[in-house]
Image (cartoon, rainbow, N blue to C red; front, side):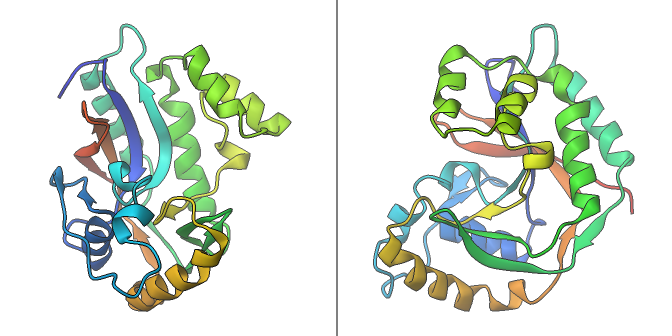
Length: 231
C-alpha cells in the first residue's frame, strides 16, 4: 500500500465475478478490482460512443460511495485505516437493498434504491463518522470547487464538518453509469442500459462487503481490500 500522498475512499463495489461487476467494468472501461482497462461492449445503437458517455465516472470503477475520497490526515497510516475498517465491518450486518432502478439524477444515469434503507444509511453514516479521524481537511481549492454547486445550508455544513456535501441526511446512494448527458441523449442511453441490466434491476442488490480503494498517479481508483460485513 502506498502512503498518505494518495487519496483513499470507502465504496460499495459489486461482488467479484458477479454479473454486475463484469458489466460495470466493461461499460465503464475500467476494472477497479484488477486495476486494468476493459474493452467496452458494442454500443453501435447509442447516440454517443460509450467511451465518451463514461469518461467522467470511469476512473472510479462501478461503485456506490460510502466515504468519499480523502487524503490521510497527518500521523495516520494506511495500517491504522485498515484496522479501523476491519472493526467497522465486523460491527455492521450484511443486508440487501430490495429494489433498485435505473434513473437520472440531474443529467447522470445511475442505479439506485427505489426506497430508503435504514441499513444502508447506518452503514454510510458509520463510514463517514467513524473513519473521519483519518481524513485530512480539504484544500481551499477543493472547497471552492464544491461550492460552485450552490450548496444548501445542510450541504455547506457537511462540507465544512465532513469534507463533502452529500453525506448523512444529504446522502443518496447510487452507482454512476454515465457523465452528464445532453437532454436528447438521456432517453436512448437509458433504454440501452435498461435492456442490458434488466435481470440485475429485477433482483435485490446484496451489500455483503465494503471496499477500500486507493487512487493511483493517473487518477484511477483500485480496490486494495474488501471487508466482509457480519453475516
